[in-house]
Length: 123
Image 1 (cartoon, rainbow, N blue to C red):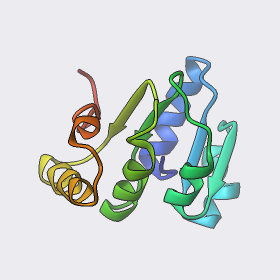
Image 2 (image 1 turned 90 degrees about the horizontal axis):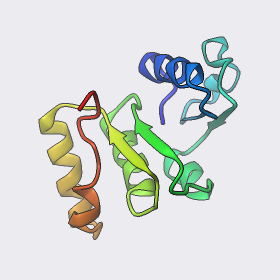
Image 3 (image 1 turned 180 degrees about the vertical axis):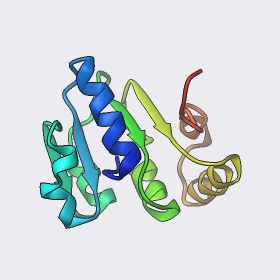
Image 4 (image 1 turned 180 degrees about the horizontal axis):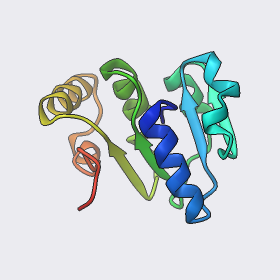
């Protein structure tokens, strides 16, 4: 989730390993971005709504690398209670703690949030 410079590189790496990739971004101009030409699908628009309408199952890997805290939060809120094989989110420890606390306040189960790999990376 996120079509910027990190999402672009992550998409390229995933394609090396023959993953089917879907890039979500809230910026319409990314729909035809040449740097994302390897993506199988590019979905633009409201992050929370777009992800909410997309079928995510236990064979899917979701990595959240959007351009900001708010869109990261929206993306995480949309996927955290779904059965993805992996959910990861980039960010500082401070940012992640802030987003997690906000989502707990909005009723997202803490147990599900603890399953998120954050900050995402090599573990």
